[in-house]
Image 1 (tube, rainbow, N blue to C red):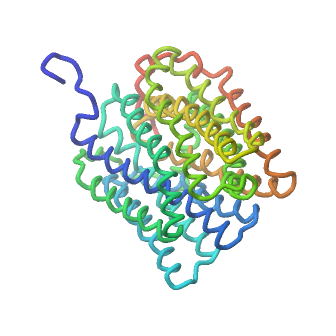
Image 2: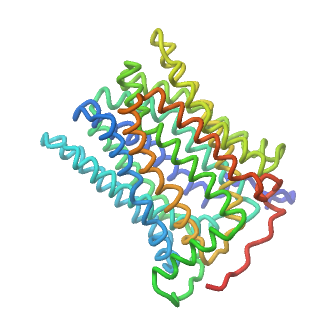
Image 3: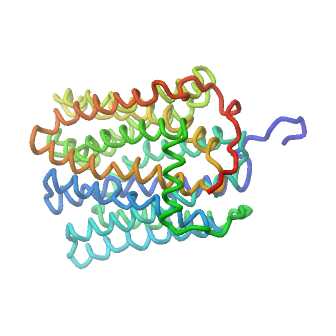
Length: 422
């Protein structure tokens, strides 16, 4: 608190600012990898649409194990150490690609293996993160903290793709991955400097499978968690039908270079920054639940505009940028209030299990969507697949109808989560 009795802005808190800086640096590195991996497959290894779908699926396939990893993480005392370990693991595996490129032995098999191991590191990070987060910020700061973290992620989508495209064009994609590996090492160093109190954990009374089942049972029975899981799982399935083909569509059908793709995606990502900045204000205006509903629709619908891209270079880049801008704005209106809501209603002693259950379904569906997207792109064409993804993702809002989410106006009105018997 400040001397005048008002709460000090969270960004001025040294512990949060240190973590926020590490997260921001890592996010910028991620933008390089997201562009580099598919470009290596498309330009160096001449991958087909189904193969590219398989590579995208490999990035997210480890999330199928999230429920079990989260059940193990719940009973580990030092969550911060797990975050550091996850960052170091991803740094090491990404450095293998520049090494293989140096010797001229990059293969699709190695790309898939790197995607799988890096994805496993991401699962470890995301299951350990919730307990670290609630030790780092107070309950009344959840929306503010999520807004700041999401804004950094959105800013990375603005500058990151353009920088990534330029680096890839100048130094090749494998060499550019060195920067992402270094970003993970910097993130690990900064997280290691954040002082948080380890929250007490109970000794597990049951086996891993039983604990995982309890986490899934809570999610499926909880009215808020069940509805939000169904909604975001549907969104992730259909958006990854489109995402698996986006770089292929931009590169081959629109004829854009790596630099042009990065610039268009970077300009479009300003929508995410705007959404992150305005999410708190929109949430106060519409309420938490209605903002989530608007975000769910606005995230997915713009993909239907992609087939309109054509004409001169500026128009092709413009359509790609506008789609990204609208979708990025929507995803922030969805993510910021939804993350705060889920954090508020989840009992502390099973946070990692709940996140694991969510990730197993929500992120675990992404490989299925990516593989299907690759097959549909080959079968019915990329443009019709994009329209199908837009329609399917937009219908995700139907899962929220009849749930208590649309009527929820503020996080403070929700009851604090009670200790659950496991």
